[in-house]
Structure formats: structure tokens, C-alpha cells
Length: 142
Image 1 (cartoon, one colour):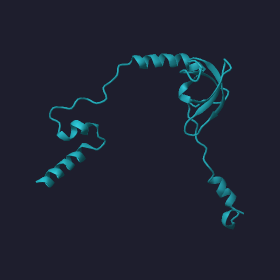
Image 2 (cartoon, one colour):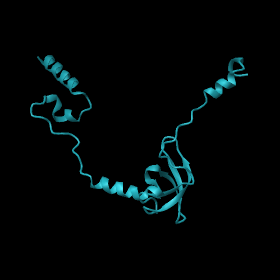
Image 3 (cartoon, helix red, strand yellow):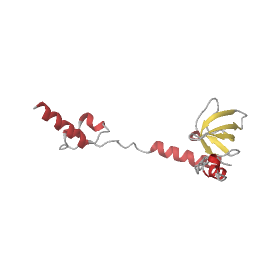
Image 4 (cartoon, helix red, strand yellow):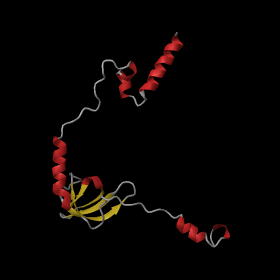
């Protein structure tokens, strides 16, 4: 019998049990061959190894045994790449390093309102609300 004395309680429980998250398509699995993308705790970048344990719900991290015999735990998935993708990763990283930096914000136009210039440009508050606030302060001081 389930909660409340009903026979369907166990079916209800199975239906409401915790959902299993979909693994990301790029998630690494145990026993997969990987290469390290940066130096970590005495293991050099480019070292190959095998994932022994994959864990974490919101942040995937791995225990890796490298070919040198070193074991490293809590390695972020961002620091690992599949062994077969290592060459492509190096090319992408080089291209990204050579890509020109784009300015984050364009310069303000000469005719733009005062609310959009100065410190307001860095504000997360919409410009029309800043203007409304300035007009209210002006009315109050009159």
C-alpha cells in the first residue's frame, strides 16, 4: 500500500522519482582517452591519460590516470580534450589567440542624451528609467 492507503502509491512514487539528467554531448566518460590542455599539479600540458572516474552534477570533474603513472583528481572537463581531438584543439586555440580583440562598447554619439553618457553607460539600468529619474529630481528641486 502506498501513502494514504492506496495500492497505487508505489506506482505514484516511481512516476515522481528523481529525473536523470541528460548528459551533455561533450561529456567525457570513464575509460575514455584524454589529453590535458594545461599544466595541472605536476602534469604537463599535452599529457595523455585515461579517465578512471567521472563525477559531478553541475560541474563535471574527473579522476585521470596519466600515462606517466600520475593520478590527478577533480580535473575540470574544461582542462581535458579527447585524445582524438587534441590536434584540432591546438589549432582552435591558436586561431583564437590570433583573433583581433573587438571593442566591447562603441563610443557615444555626439547627440546622445546625458542619461546614456558618463557612468550611466556602464549601468545595467535602462536609459529611459535613468532619464525619468533625472527629470523627477529636476521637478523636485524646482
